[in-house]
Length: 120
Image 1 (cartoon, rainbow, N blue to C red):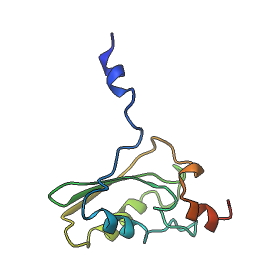
Image 2 (image 1 turned 180 degrees about the horizontal axis):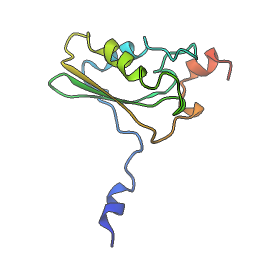
Image 3 (image 1 turned 120 degrees about the vertical axis):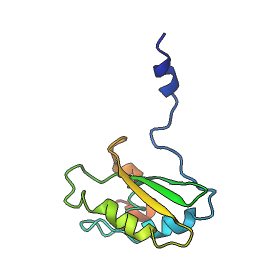
């Protein structure tokens, strides 16, 4: 029996965030200041921020995606997120990682984003 398959089954596609960490809301607010230049909605409301993992020592790891792999700002957006989060009091380091799994879809947008873009 292949045990590695058993261990993966039931594993969430998107790792959970550190929602109970005192810095979590500030990191979310910082992510809300970053916009995809082609869409007038911030990347958090677009659902591009998959995971915000905050360690006890203030190390922040953000796992994010983009609306499409060919996004013209693919190389720049992780840096924009890092630049927004790094100055926050209590943040020691920021690591922003791009992922394509699961692929981003319009269902990941918040209701606010859908309303803003005319999908509701």
